[in-house]
Length: 128
Image (cartoon, rainbow, N blue to C red; front, side, top):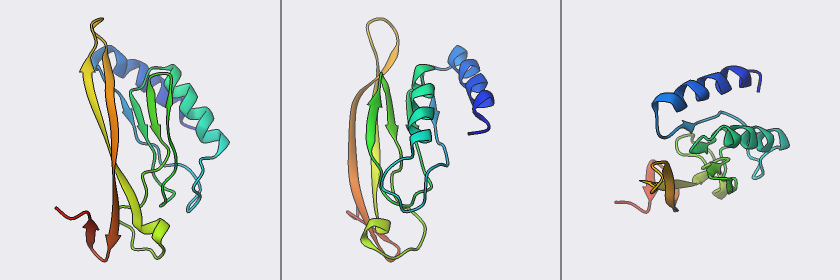
């Protein structure tokens, strides 16, 4: 993560003006269902800066969701748009985070849940 000092600087600036900070890194090995150690290290460093959530992308498959301190990290939510074969590459998740202000005035994630989806052709299921 060669841009880490710049990202840290931007997060610190954003914290002065915003109650929530979401990072969307393009990271990880394609088709690997586990995050790399450097992704986990970077996620811990960003959590230490107080980001609200990290939504990773690039692997084209689902990877774990974890909570580091108060930061939620979705290492990869799957494959929403690329036309690829295999169940693991057609499966994704939509992640929902409810935010609320705590009594101390800080914005916090109060609930997290996911909707698993599966793509067949151009249609996503469940279909609404």
